[in-house]
Length: 395
Image 1 (cartoon, rainbow, N blue to C red):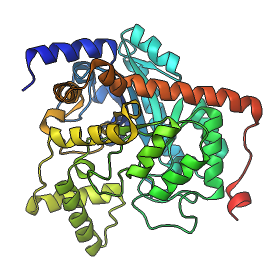
Image 2 (image 1 turned 30 degrees about the vertical axis):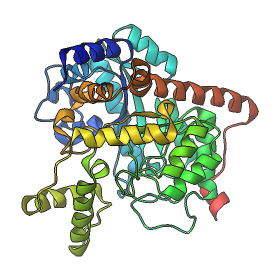
Image 3 (image 1 turned 135 degrees about the vertical axis):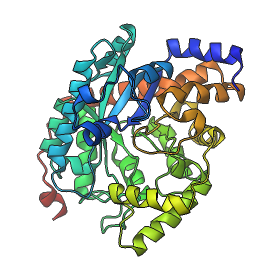
Image 4 (image 1 turned 90 degrees about the horizontal axis):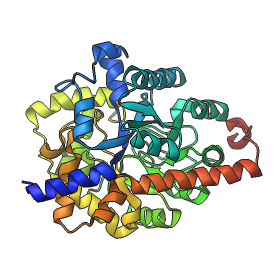
């Protein structure tokens, strides 16, 4: 239980330094549940029981900025069109509740949203399939407000390796993949390394002139799952200046759940289901769970990841990326977006200062985006938009 004194301390902290979360899949839930009709998913009235996210719970959780994931499955055709529909949905969500949300394209926009009492709404494209190996498509996503690109989702792209797919011939990033990173730097879009293979992480850190992020990843040393970040990469993140935003997803946080997920993946493969197929595996695992209960996840499991990343990378390089509406089975205290104060209170009770907590909630992400914007301003003076094509570089 959080003491009244700690609760008051966290409330005061969040009023000054609200949470900036790295990844929320509400737009995909809006697609699946109501075909993007926001009248059918009334965030102002509350959507408890339908989603993890609505306006009352965002306010209760102290959320002041959110990267809304504009995600589409990585193994389906038509990813560019589907991504554009996701982008449109976020724009219309902001337009539907302008008193609550403000579209943010820059770090200054985020601070302006806070000053007006609104939640800064940024967009992140989850997976390189969203650009169909086209730098022109990448630039158009930037023009529409997308401010990070996750290089892969569950499957490899033709130019980058995923953590959950077989290694490809280019072993991380191809030459075109390096060019994608360079163009992201020039645009001021963040390179997001969640979901990518460790070789891709290292290659991207080699190539990037700007800070990178992990929008929703945890520590591999704490939970040995391919989606998590190895310690050597966390150490390099400190040099790079980026941030690892800890996810709350049980399979990437709790070792016992990770083992359950591995067992379920093997059972899915035996039935001809690809565990990297998010929708098919989600349906399979829901049935599997009926006879193979999932071990519980606790708040302490999440705390362990936050503190390990702090220990390895430093307090200036850790953030929060819950992955709400993209998973299930969260720790009870973190069951939805209202749960961030419980995590912050647990850290406060373990000796985190207000200054440390302020970096975790949003200070680190604000600095990272500002630094990426500064790099982009320089690179735009130094080089023109890349016209490279994947066939030119990768054959």
